[in-house]
Image (cartoon, rainbow, N blue to C red):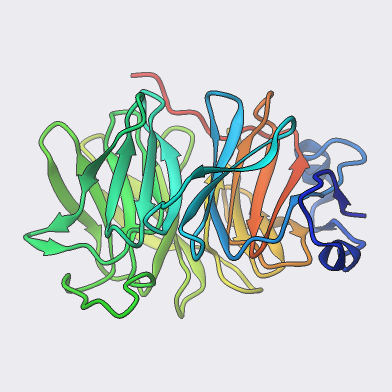
Length: 309
């Protein structure tokens, strides 16, 4: 059963939790990925639409409640709290090489960085003199370059200025912004393989699949073949673990694929998940943001680390 560990919850939602936590497609791989007796826990609920989980160096989780215009904070001791409000309708979050928070802001139409003292600065907000649409998710490569998706989900009636929904690479050294893929419907979550030779990008539009690109040392991207399709809901947030498996949010919760694109297991939730991330004291807790709620499950996996340069 899904267990609720926080006092911040709605009784009606808790009582409707699903009785099954997993659908196992490969028993041997499942045992390598999850400890015996692993259970999904509902940590908090009652929010509007949550996204963008990121475990912070201070030992807590930050995630977005997009319609509430708020970044939330959760830890086992303090439970659910406000981290930042307003958040400019932030969606995805990640950390740069210095441990600073990067956020993809729908409302601000930019990728922002939170400095150590708490001030926010703009990383990227335009391409060729045109405003970005609504940056959705963001990751950082070991060379410091920042990669993000820019679909038009968060325009909220504002005019679209760029000619498409692109995947971008931003070089902080040169300040140059380069589109590395222009043929997506709704580019969404993205993550690198452990050695950074592959970039996975979810398309949550009509294709409902995850594509994979080969990444050269200079950042050039080639390929873009379909890696895997999500058969329930859409792929949204994705993460790669240290073994090269790809974990994707989905309509049934989350789906985990091996490096060849074979489905290994489904993590079943009573709400469709929008994103996920590894964290916790040992880095082996998978946190899932699902509509109005935050969930967690213990794993044997850890998120892929950036290679040392």
